[in-house]
Length: 278
Image (cartoon, rainbow, N blue to C red):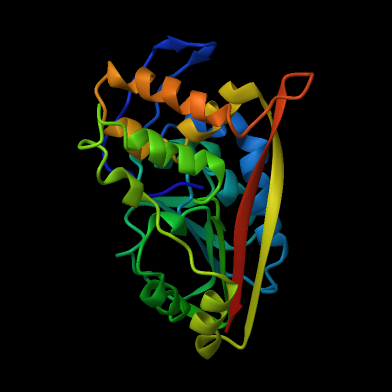
């Protein structure tokens, strides 16, 4: 699930310690290298939605359409709209799920043409600030018995992201990357979202799951985040600096993640799930 493209495209073909670093803007190809792993939490979120009758659903931050496809399979007769800020992702989604409608747009300013039965946001809302006003506003776009379903990576304090911030502080590019750390919004805890949404919903379900993704060494961790969290950092760097950043990042990862004998690294990945039903 993706969102918030800043318009930059990164093409870095540097060969670095077995990594081919390619398109790291909102690249559908890079994102879908880990399609099964990225789609699993999307499916877990959808399976917990209590709303059975859905005539109109919106996939907020639809990315390349893998999450939209889940909505279509569950709600076969529903009208489904996918919204994403990336033109590349929208093009991929239209090709993948031709039976659904897709529009390019920003989630923080998006308004529906009519009320929905399901607003579904898988791994998109972490790119937006102002949850205290945005989330209650989204509940106003729902029909009675409709649900707002949100899943967000909750990993800013994981070693993967601490390392990104440490590398970004390097004097070689610190000035360029002064704003990159702010690309992701810090999440509130479960109590914050419960207190925020309960006045607007008759039922609020919140849980946190830690997935453990088997990846091929430290290079696998880098490849995973090239499709998401590394984008804002690499977008601000020159072609010469990008592989230097990745090399330093991988050195820091080695301090926290040790490959097993078979070369696999298990990447802990916590995610926060929220379903508010009105």
